[in-house]
Image 1 (cartoon, one colour):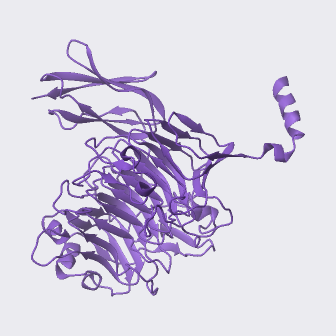
Image 2 (cartoon, helix red, strand yellow):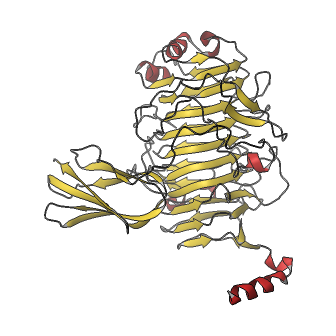
Length: 543
């Protein structure tokens, strides 16, 4: 007690300037495990690559800034294949990636590059992909390449991370911008949730292939598309929110199947539930690619469930239809691999019928056959100015309540409402939308949430598929962050594989991949343990 009192007395007389944060300039690649802490600010001086299987840990409350520089001198952070980022903020202490300058607004876009994560999951590229623009800063495929064969590849964790003012031109050619968050071949072993992309000079998010899943994404006031996927992306998403500005030039979602050969497999097929997309305004006149809020093309499939789409000056959706071929997104729709269901549409400049908001009769047929409605979702506020008038929660009497249906996949939380919000506003506390003054007050507890986002108990799920040959997925849930071990044994009790060894996992659902190609047919046991529990199940390998 005496020591603590002495320390407190000393701190009272320490000059404020002595306690100010130190700026640490990062000007070389990160090749060993590294931790960035909240008592410093970090300035990215150029394009910084985390490589050589290094892990970068960023403490909650840390600010990372991108130095101003464009073309070959642009700044950004690239997590290369085999390396990982663990950026785990909280609602009270988010991790902020932003520009070097302070005092910026939503109109200040393209101040630095952005954040890039590269993984080893599959794409449908015929040859290995490299990230546009960044590949002109470095031609080393170990730094800029993405893709592989491991759909459960783990690139780390992003949680409560706000990425602001990105999208400056990258590399030696014009028109190269990376997004707020760019993902190339990122696998489903990666955790991405509570991430915001704010005021990007290009897209908010772009997926180049891969299988990563993401919850609670915010795309706000980005110059081009809010969400963009390509090259065989097959991840899942829930609780995605987009709001576009009145001069927005892109779409809420631009969805492509391939970067080159559209017959390449795997076909793109993301599944999204509980999205709320707010366009640039029903009376706005933005330039560029804003003819439809949603565009499906280049042979992509996909599904939106339980979502809200509103306030757009033209049509809701366009599905590419190329004369004389079924290698287009119309073909995917007619194969029942492209659907929008149990969703609410409202306030489109093209009209107020399903025919008005569809690009073609076959699109109208899809919309009319999937329990969609044109009705006012009664959102509380969609202001795009810093007047505290943005509140995308529905009023209590809104038609979104009772509309939602199960997606049929255990990864998705079950809700009784369509759209990304219920009574609580998960934007509160950590986003630029809040800190810049867009959100109103009293946003968190007006109505009790009806979903349980964190499991109440530890569970070890049955592997899927079972029986299997030679790979299978093993899932488990945790009610709080903790270290766990997952090992596989044969029937004689001999350990044959370690899938996690005292590895830290966050609260929520997790899935690990097990490859038994080197093992013989038979029954195996998998066991999940920590200091406090041990759970065991069996599985069958048949070759």
